[in-house]
Length: 335
Image (cartoon, rainbow, N blue to C red; front, side):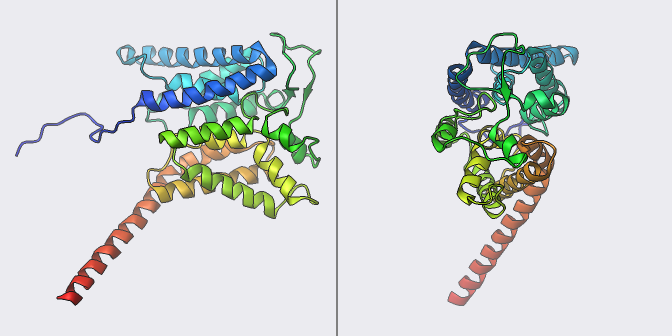
């Protein structure tokens, strides 16, 4: 028997890079409609700037590394990265900051690891974390929704804190349940409308683009943590509401935690991965320097992904061994 060597992957699936990225693009476009509704044309220009910066950064790297022939229009990953990054930013962020954040995400967090699908860290999470460190005050100062913003932000634009920042300072956010659900609160321009984000999650689950394990474990751990240690002492339910639905927690659970490249491959590993990310996120929120810690938590569990894979593989190996022993014992007893 002769074997013919072939380039990987050796296992084929109906899903492709284009189909997976296309599903994410469809859902993020819906969030851009909401960003435009709340903040006007500036939100769309931020998104366009981020996408162009990510695409040009990837083309620049490929050209400098002599991989110009590998540049493909079918690789939509830089477009998705740019859209996710921009939706995590305030609508008042300077355009120069958007460009630098996107360049860092592609040129530092993604490109040095090789081709698309070989990166160790989620590029969007790395870009946002870099932006938080470099532009902390601007990253956590948000314009009021339903106010169309000018292209150039000046002193006339009133910037406020979002509910997660108020919780961090020991305050109680003055927003109703409906305002929180529909995103009519200050925050990242694409991460506040919980109703639309939930609809996006359902769509991605039905399409099989994301698995339920990571977001379910992540949200469950965050819910339990917020319930056991409420920052609004007189109302645990209200504390859970603002912890889960303020800031970028839900957005990160849907669009960043489920990156197939940086996620474990087994179901048990995905559950542990999501639970660890949720626990670290809440620790960062309660004790960290920034009111939002989901991006830092995702980067940390990215670095532990291999450990989750090894541990889950050992569990599956033990189960298979036990099943073989049971079959052998049962068959011997019958004979």
